[in-house]
Image (cartoon, rainbow, N blue to C red; front, side):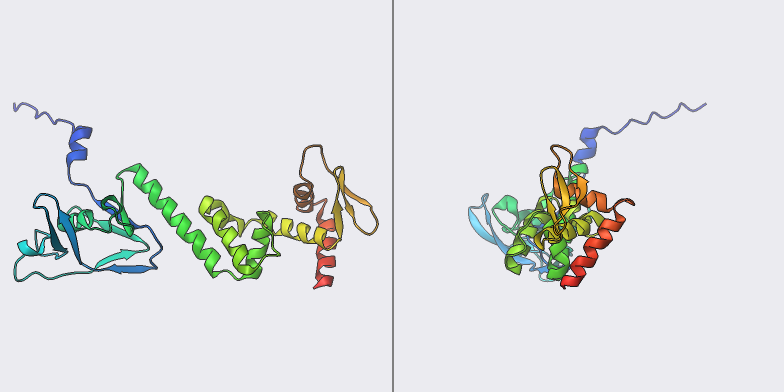
Length: 254
């Protein structure tokens, strides 16, 4: 009987030493498609000289003086700010790693994502920021005002100033910023803030009142924010009548 063949498990060290796919990301927004030239120059410390490099898919070397007369250049294309380089394109990876605009070489255009889970997490984070900024850019100011109020931003500023402050929020927590546009508490809180500004209701330390009659709407527990309390109340079945009355009064002002 043949002796069973022993299969040796691959170690983590061996796995990491094998060629790995690489992912490069733009440091600034580059649109849906960003084309980067396949030509550049870089300093070769070994030869102490400046050398021309270019990406040619059919050439094993990235250095012009080592390429054949049949070398054919090809543009480098980032899609949604990302360039994925598979293991079967080592010349493209070498070009990107050597390029002077790579952050590791002192550039500012793109950088290499680390392999593994951290790379995936960083990519997701980059995409979220990109999506949040896109929403901010595409939305009309009237659609941004409720979100601005929710974040406590002064809406009496110019539109540019409002967008600038919202940009800070979008970058600081992109997932929460994106979710705020579908969060019902955001629009309700914006209505409450407007109702206070137009003297429909007033908030005191102990409760929220109708401005004209001083009749109590809801008491405020000690240590809680009055705007948050009345906003949550308006979203309940018990507070639906109050919410409807506030909206009606606001509609009369427009």
